[in-house]
Length: 181
Image (tube, rainbow, N blue to C red; front, side, top):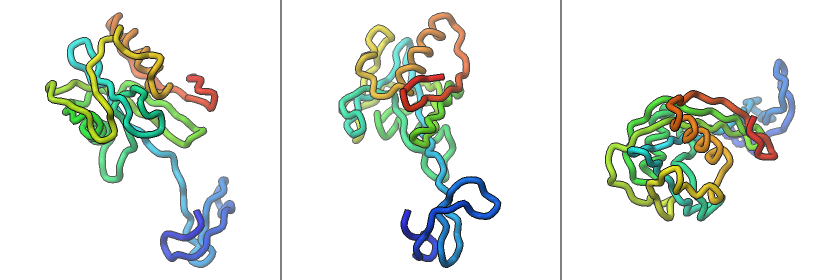
C-alpha cells in the first residue's frame, strides 16, 4: 500500500500507539489502514451419493478440479457467499446446510469455510470460472487432480465420515508445507 484511501497522502508502515503489529498509517490524516485475512467460502454440493465438482477455467490451478468456493463479498452472509459462488461457478442452485469445516491458511492470510449443501435440481452447467462441472461419486473423484489441499483433504474426510454415518465439524490449519493440522 502506498497511498491513503481516505485522503490520498502517502502511508508509512509502522506500529501505531496502542497496537502490536505494523500497519499502514497515513502521514497526513493518520488513518490506520488495517489489512485482514480474506474469507473463502464454499460448499460440498450433494445429489444423492454424488458431489458436484468444478474444473477451474482460471488461475491459480487452471484445469484442476475443486468444489465451488470463492471470496466472500461485503454485505453478504457466509451462507449467501457459498450459494452465490456455487451459482457463479456451476450455475447450480443449492440449499446451504451445516458448516462442515474451517481452515486457517495464515501463510496466505485466508480462512476457508466449507458448508454441506444439497443441490435443488440437476439444472447446472459451467459458469465463467469453470471449464466443466460434473456430479461424481467417491470412486469417480479425480483425487490426484484436485486443485487445492484445502479442498482435497476435507472432501476425503467428508466421504469417510459419510460412509460411517458420522459427519462432524472440523477446524484446522494448513501451513506453508500444505500440511493440515
